[in-house]
Image (cartoon, rainbow, N blue to C red; front, side, top):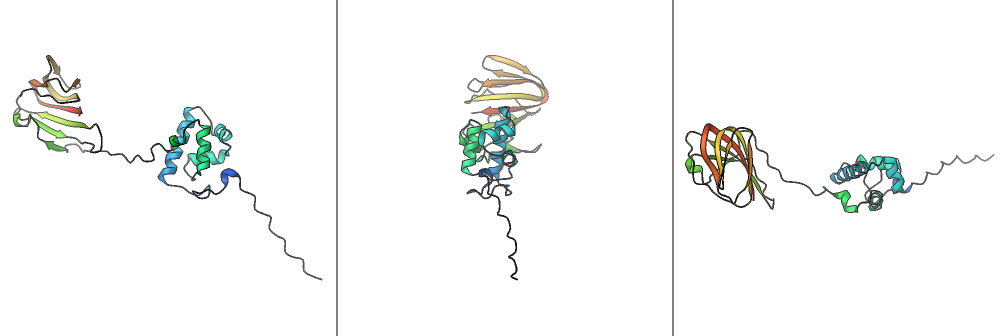
Length: 217
């Protein structure tokens, strides 16, 4: 008697559209890239801002709820078709899902007591200017500076510059002039003014004086 052939394995189930491999790799594959994380954040933030549940987004996009969850957890790479579905479901341009993908942004960190001492108009009058950091690539730079006045400091002719300036008093007391006005500043006081107006310390009342000056050009 002939031996019957062994039973064949059942055919594998067909992949659903949102689980099918795409040009970016098979869905469900671990995706720890920065682009996946950016898309995950954008999709979830826009969904929540619209008061939409993951299930509702799945219905709108034709994706499974599991796939939406994978995208929002950055555990899968999305094909261009999937990204278009997400954008349509969220009523956004596709580019909105990539916002922040190219944002390797500049920052400057300065420890307490550090920062470069710079020479300015008041240096020869005993004023110390310590730059707390700057952003080289910024089109409109700001300059945060810690200014220290001591018993060796004198007042000096006021100066002018383009842009605006913000002063925040940290220690001591002084009278600060801007244009025809005078302001007595104590710790916690602040002053914002246009740099084109003549400005600077007029009277040093209580030393030492320390204040943060932020100039935006």
